[in-house]
Image (cartoon, rainbow, N blue to C red; front, side, top):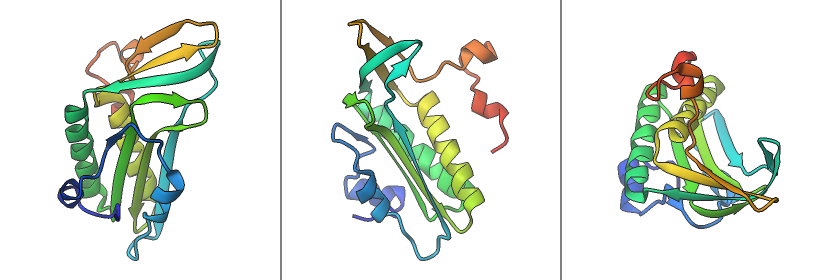
Length: 169
């Protein structure tokens, strides 16, 4: 399956924007080449081994799958239209994700690198801040902490304002 499909075509072939399976970055990248694109950008959000001064064992993600799928599709379509992208794809894992594994991937392709980078950043920021996906960090000391993906309110003072809205994209 090619990921250069439009959203509607992707939906017809049952492309999963939310998955329990390990994300195969190499396979996705291999499917992300397009004759009209001079730039392909792949972002992989990976589980690191530390956070807030603690050692992390793994993360666990939950999502409102139907709503998350719809929202990711809308974000991808908005990016595709705004930057005239050849490819706009994103996939987020749910369930247990180990250290060094990819929790989320975003791939964009366009005629030039500026659009590919800007759109990729736009997509990941909106997914992280708007899509109903929650993570639980499991620490080496046996504790765990649930949280959403967005902590912007600490800086903006408003739960409806996100930091990326103040950056030029």
